[in-house]
Image 1 (cartoon, rainbow, N blue to C red):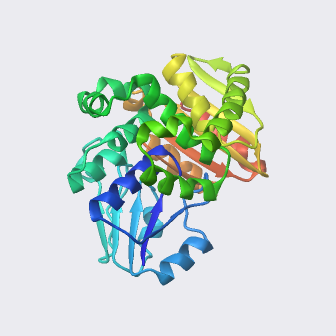
Image 2 (cartoon, rainbow, N blue to C red):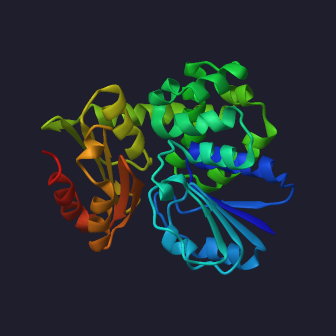
Length: 311
């Protein structure tokens, strides 16, 4: 059995679709991790135990990948250490100091497959900035997908993980593989979810506080909207960075920290991640962003660490 473990967002889903096409896989199983947590849970380890080959895409969990005992292709773009496990082939431009805005571009480059999925992964990860990249514009133009349609497609694909529907995230790969891209704009299950989620994001943004040009947003929601709120605050509203706290997310606390490209020169996100992990939080991220899940009684300590960098 070929097993694909992927991130739950648009980049993870499109990267997986590109891999399936690149390898001409006809039979495979795909699983995403517990949404919001950078770990392999019991369900994933059980599937790995039955698999002949593993593919890990856009999922920054190098400690877990070190533990696998089957041949593994690990493709990513997040900042991470080099894997020592001899069973793992690690493809990640960041190991050589190169920045790639999405895993979909890394997968496309590796397999020589370029289509709308390649571009949507970028739009999913960096939003409006993606349209400043010539390659993204050309790929979308080739398939007659407008800027607005690309952003809407990302919103629809992401609605599955934002609604905390793990099985729907996994099913999204099959949906992507079985539909023309523009058909997905009218895919009713995603359209309905996206509308409810949009209202929740607007509510979270409306209560933001400001400190030294950084936005701080506190709210409680069953939806996994912290990354979307942060992107809106930084990319659309122009804050230097955003600290987004969901204080009661299915019994846990969520923290998301996104900074602008300029701030990334000053704030070393990898350093912040290590400090959060020292608290016992589950944390991961890349150059301009980190996500963290922790017990509710630890969220104040986690936020205090982030606040040290808001100067």
